[in-house]
Length: 197
Image 1 (cartoon, rainbow, N blue to C red):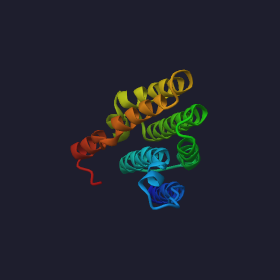
Image 2: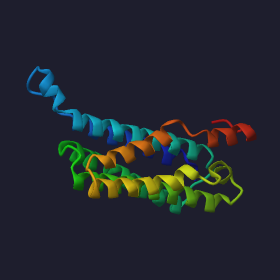
Image 3: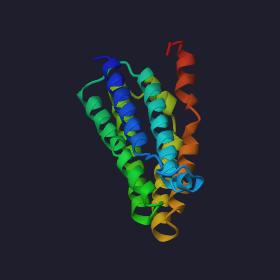
Image 4: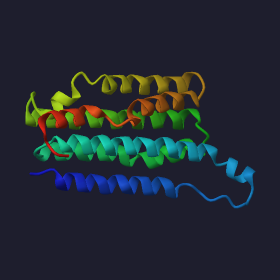
């Protein structure tokens, strides 16, 4: 099977996730700066999650650009990823509404960690299907960002629980900063092989 339907479905789910998150931003009932300022935790958590969804969308697009075919294992691995990403509106809203409190921050970090693990599983299923010398395997290489991210998520969760609840968000934002610049590895491999995007 070609990847077009998988990509289209994934794009639709990610668009819905962003839509649900933005609907959680409630309009202040008073026309004052104070009323708007009271929303800063909700808005900050929304921005962080919006960036994460954008990162996943961008990297998923690049991954599918070097994937020739899918199968049942890849479709299920992709659904597994979408499941964890679909929980982001809930964990984002809970963390924001509770001003980055301890338990909501830890759960948000767990959601990010589960999403990262699911993305890794999807990536490995594709590499297994296409072979160790496939374009994706070449592009991923040692994947230092992919290995560092779960460690930072765990540190963020521990920091939120043991130190200050808001400190977890610092780690989560650091991981986003690592990934927010579009990953050039796949684009380089595509450029080297002459394949169009």
